[in-house]
Amino acid sequence: MYLADKFTKKKLEILKCAAIQFRRHGYHGSSLTAIARASKMTKSNFYYYFKNKRQVLYFCHDYVMDCLLELLHKVEENYSSPVDELHALLISFVRLMIDELPLHAGTMLAGNSTALSASQYGKICAKRDEFEQGIRRIVKRGMDSGVFRAGDPKLITFAILGAVNWTPTWVDPSGPADSDEISRSFADFLVGGLVTQQNRRQNASRFTGAGSGTTLSKRANGKSRIRAKKSAVRGRAPGMPPQKSGRPSHLAV
Image 1: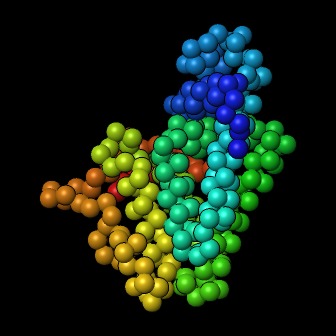
Image 2: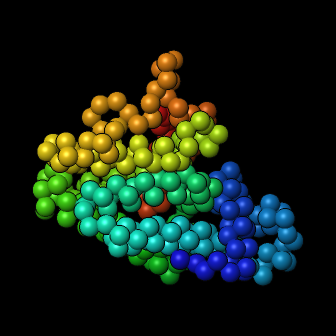
Image 3: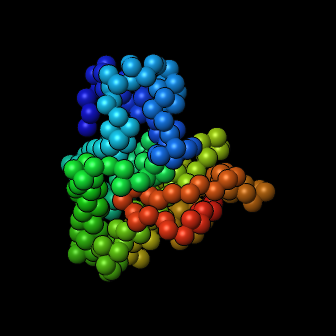
């Protein structure tokens, strides 16, 4: 992961401002002048940190992927059970998606991987594939040991990534449910759905949202604590195929 030196911290500040611009106006609709202005610096100062807009987009993707790979490596080092590994990874994964929402939404909606050079795109794809293989490895180990229900590890991994990567399209930071609550609900449902009946009973206290009820408990008025965005957001999850239909997603909990 990137070292937290003064230069890198400033690049991350610029990156978050750029990601917001990408999210609002798209990659091609965002100018360096607008990004520099949002970062509260002159255009000439901006060039000290980034040579061009493409480099900003690459750094955005690269930073996000490095964060995810660091989470994967920490989980594999600290847990031995596939259930614990996947549950902990998903909690951290979803929490990161929400806590660093501008970055993730920026990469999704800036999306346009074609804007990257062939070399940059190849590097991002390599890290994306490494993260995907890590999740698939955990899922397969769980299936081989009989902890998870039998299935296609690749398909299950794609389902998990699809669910989590789409979070920025509907989550509302101003909603009453925080990232901890949302992330635990995701982990409970996604991992709880994989665990066999026997192992689910053994882990009943963990999977409070799987099978019955929900961790995001509904209040007396029956409304979920998560507040969906009023306006749909168009885009695609990092590493997912471009959305050709142009139809917005209306995911809401």
